[in-house]
Image (cartoon, rainbow, N blue to C red; front, side):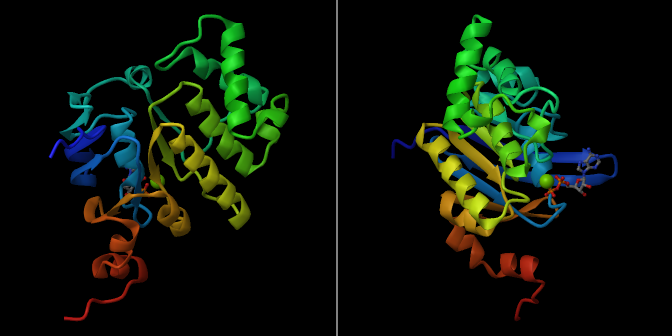
Length: 247
Ligand code: ADP
Ligand code: MG
């Protein structure tokens, strides 16, 4: 068979927030070089899953493996060093700093770390060019609109030169044209060799980008497969459209 080891393997993870089970016994894998998507209604546990895999907070139960190595209890900075970067669903730019200065610090972290400020600025400029923000590098980050702030989130993550990028609703609040541009950027990031895991509500984006989709509902995986497979799954349709299954 000679099947490659998955870049991420999630084994039976659960997250309890006091009384609430936000994620329950979830297992899945991400293949290297691919784009894996996660969908599900609001409150399904998508961001919680994402946060556990990124080391933002620990799983209550279960294990997470990165290239076969158990990383379940690693700290967020250790993830960055390993080559895992993320964006936040709620953008967190340093609003009063320039776009460039928002990206420069990331270049000092990650797998490849800049040795000097000049080198970090060069990496940041290269990433701004790549993400289409170079023309706005001297603008204050807080003065940009939502689409550019979403791009800036990605640029800050990319300056750490990750091999795995996690995107939490990178397209929320974008109009159709802006969505197309974001899809194009995510494809370009993937083409550059970065494995992508994304949470997304915009189905068009999921269909055009993802090779595999995992569907969560009430913290449990209810379907997994190609976008076409999961969107034709009767239970997924019921969860999204509220239709009762014929018996
Ligand atoms: P999604 O991203 O799919 O919309 P979340 O993972 O954000 O869902 O949330 C799943 C459930 O966990 C929700 O019921 C939410 O209210 C709850 N939850 C998320 N984060 C916390 C937290 N830090 N403390 C307590 N409950 C939380
Ligand atoms: Mg969420």
